[in-house]
Image: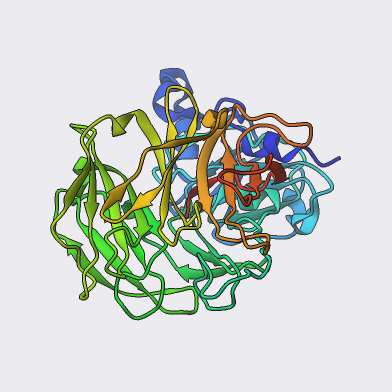
Length: 407
């Protein structure tokens, strides 16, 4: 019987019987020596509980194990990928599937979680062990207006970008599929935002902050869902800012702008876009208190006055507020709703339903519960209304777990 996905993905080192070599003690020197024989870059297994004796090793996925079928009693994963241990041959899912995290250093080994392993698969992310793609499923209806909000490839469907835990970037075009648009290295960024044309070529761009340097980069949109060459638009110091949010045109000059909260003061700053793709001199539009908000969402035009608006969640209460856009600043806030504290992240997806109103998608945190789904990684859709706010949310999928940023 196939075990629940949550069980497979929640298997910790303790549950798997993993232990550090340093903690084994002097009396287990033979086990240490045998475990250390697993070469770096390999997945290894033994027929004994103490990792001694004959050793199985592979650098590739294997569909059948021959004489090693049902023989794994201890394992070591020295690859840079997750090892999926299937009870079924050919990586089937009728039986259990266990994941073993990569430990290239070889400092951890232990039980495989199952004594009936029949096939091994090496994948980049843990969610792939559960039979999921590295990216979540996303589908959208054609938007009523053109150009469409959040449309990266010009087909009037709202699109999504997501980063997996391996640092790859995926484009989700709204038709249920995904396309790899960044083969790696995106984990070097600790802030990612989009919605707006900053380079002036009519295509939506991506802004990313480099964690190690505090540099701010503009990745020009290609018009196909991928990103092109990058432009340095901030030479340093951006690690001092929270909640970087590509907003839309707040200054009224027809160019997209960026919002950011200063960590030390709680001030909200507007960084206006320029004709070159760089950012102009910043302007203070919020004198303090913005550290009390733990999510800023560049939503688009909710009030239908032709100006972009901001949604923000209050950390202490879970309330969601609308800050209507005004030329060069924001108007007085309006309460949209309560109970949003259980959400881990938000996506502004434009007119996702195709009814002419902007919609919102939220991805749940561990405290979420509904009659259909519960826990982290549930995608809940909130349909926009003719008046400010949203209809009651409806959960659509529980497959949005194990990601590293969706925007």
